[in-house]
Length: 75
Image (tube, rainbow, N blue to C red; front, side, top):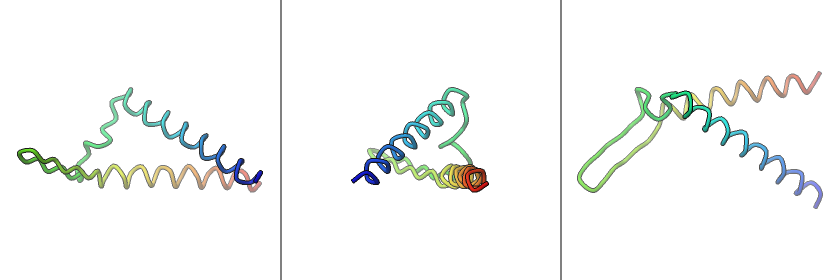
């Protein structure tokens, strides 16, 4: 039961960090969601939006940050 509690606390901290990063990105007018390669189709009464390039960029950044953190913790 303690491991479940630790996992939930860690998940909460991660969600707070991700929320803070998204907030800061919007404050600095980063074009996440409006990059070339993000798919947006608008028709009458219908909008389809798929942020492909933004998702890839965020994935790469998160992967690099997590790799740096894991390497620092292993020392």
